[in-house]
Amino acid sequence: MCYLVGMNIREEIQALKRQRNAVILAHNYQPGEVQDIADFTGDSLELARKAAAVNEDVVVFCGVHFMAETAAILNPGKTVLLPTPDAGCPMADMITGDQLRELKAKHPGAKVLCYVNSTAEVKAQSDCCVTSSNALDVARSYPPEQEIIFVPDQHLGAFTVEQTGRTFILWPGFCPTHAWMTGAHIAGARAAHPGAPVLVHPECPKAVRDAADHVLSTGGMCRHIRTRTEPVFIIGTETGILHRLRNENPGKTFVPLLEAAVCPNMKKTTLEKVLWSLRDNQTVVTLPEAIALPARRAIEAMLAV
Image (cartoon, rainbow, N blue to C red; front, side, top):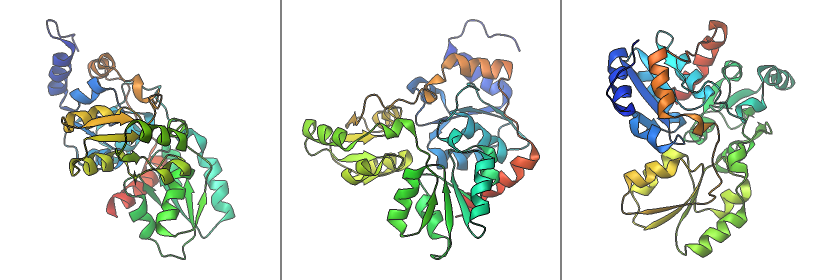
């Protein structure tokens, strides 16, 4: 495909997108300029739902590898492109399919719930996926006496246990970006911004969740803030969400709980990489059917709840 001369990079992306009948999806943690050229920006659940319903031939996924895998699993007849093939997820890498198989062998009657922040191989070993938006609803869909293995995020798993009263077998995985946050950060933010509500992600450690006013997914934060009248909000999650919050709520102020809460993998996407991805058909995400089919069942089980 020829390079488009005389256009700025955003115009080139839009022209190539039309030529290829493509749609651009971006996670809330992506850089602001990437969110701005996306057709849809959302959290993991919103993106999974959107990916399951796209009509375009090509899906450009601005996120990390497991997210593009999920889009490819849900769209076996479409081309899914990941502009940053080296953008991984440390949490997803904290458990392998073999490790999950070994854990299941020790608990033969257990159902497996896996956070969507996991590899396709782990999803293929699971009964149902969850996101931070719907983990509580999915957990409540099982009988109270059902033994449940929850992987890989111990913090989202513990939060789900606290809210539902269920008993989980938790895998000791975590998100390094959220694990940096502490109760002392919340105390300092409240002192600097008296009266401002604190919203944190359920991937945060328990001390942070307990000290916050609300524990919400990034999509949940966006919906909650739209209904509120407070002028200032303290946001405890990856700082990429602040771009969307500021765009959607121009009269409100958003303060990061921790300025350093930046996921280096989420920030690998650039406009140039999106352009090159569309132009050169890079990088196509594919999965063997032996993994994609059972992983699809787990994702579809989540979407059905």
